[in-house]
Length: 219
Image 1: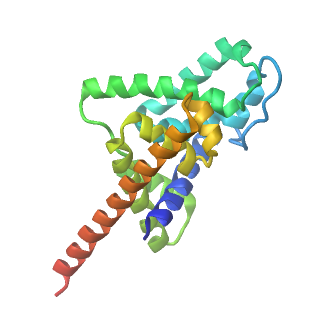
Image 2: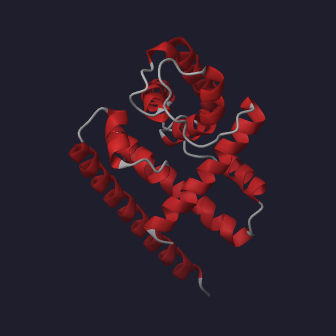
């Protein structure tokens, strides 16, 4: 497993969880990014097109699994109140991310007051595994990648975490990410380089630890 394959597998795992949550809990399609309309956004379309994006981004930004349902509802409540503020100068998802980030920050502060941050639980991961119907070996590797990603994201400062999530997990361009975060393009590029370096070191450390454990278990 390389850093790039770990990111790719984590993307697939988070996307799976988001699609299931959207279909089972909200009835949304979780479709592709919405084009930016002029004037106020149409709430039903924004909801249907972006509920999966909201779910997986909230999770990637550290909202615990047991709180993500409330966080999704809170995000769309803000969207409903503020849809008239959307001016159509950016994509809907860059506008949404500003709301998602504030909601995630609120829930993470709430969780921090209660104790240590929650990682993706084995129960949640195993549930996703059953739905994916992958081979045991492939699923084990995928779940391992998500666990690594979960631990990594909790070590990143918020500003680097946001860039990493938007670019490497959501596939946004650097200009789109700069617009979503309200920072300069060079700042986004710098934060992304640091975040990727941390991720690669985390993967290398994990692989070294795993190799040591495997060696110790050999007869």
